[in-house]
Image 1 (cartoon, one colour):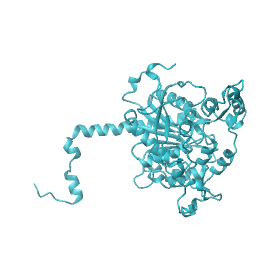
Image 2: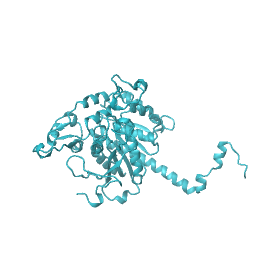
Image 3: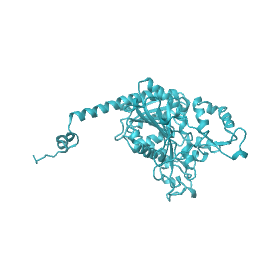
Image 4: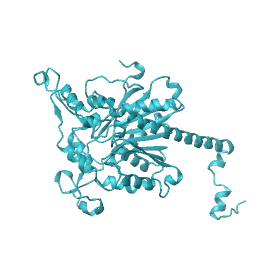
Length: 435
């Protein structure tokens, strides 16, 4: 039972209910978990993102607060914004968060708190919203939702803020960095889906469209998943999180339940998962498409089948504008990150107008781990070690910036800091004749 200090609480005017699995919330090895339910950003990117034009969505958010003396973290430590992969609930990141806390503590660094929300159409957010979700989610919505979340809780999210996301979650955080270039001090993109080709989306969508999504009991589902080689590639702790949070009960009443309990289904529906992989470019009435045919939009983005994912290409084209320091963590065996894709991202990121300066400025780097696409789920400890070193360096850089700010404040009066000075006038080529 959580003590009063760590009781699950919500943002004002929100509400909470237990949504998945077997009921009671719990702590992780290194964190106390606080749950929030908050409103999502006003208006979805696509007309068919919700069933009704006035439907509003909510986000289920986990806040992870390190165990121990909170007073020691009050004026120090890093705030982390997390983002999860498509089809996998946010709780599957918890083994990585625990490992990251271990690695950072060993380096003498501290985490103030970690915040991560389920995408509005997935996980516990998807369960909250299932009555109003439409058939066309957009990749661009989650970054806007995160920005809205951060604005609501800004007093609890002081700088420096680091974003960490895997797969499409990395794409969401790249978008957040583009929406607000100074919000994130550092950006860790773990095998991001950022390229012009629809590979591996087609492969993922084909596999998921016909996937099984119901089992007679939680025990039967667990046995099936544990015997599957795909799930065996994950860290065992991650698989445990999948079984706890990736499934939800289908309560059919006493007459419909087996001795092993009620049937279970996926927390994220198959439909909402596959809609996130591909967007139709064929006409379908329910999608409420506009009058301009999709083929008019960047024809080079189209890739054989009558589907596309325009947001991915839009974000890829903006990589030169990325402002925060950026670490890429790629999976060597990932179908999303062959060598040519990795090189393209490294060459582009931060290299443009008002970007971070890119590789040449030492602000973009990469690490390749011996694993597949879901790096943080397959190799959470190795990924945490890499990320903690990057965060340590960025914390040092942040502290240097803050010292310079304090030095300027010490040396100059308020008027000298904010008023029009002689240097401005000389460079503008004007002469003040009022003296």
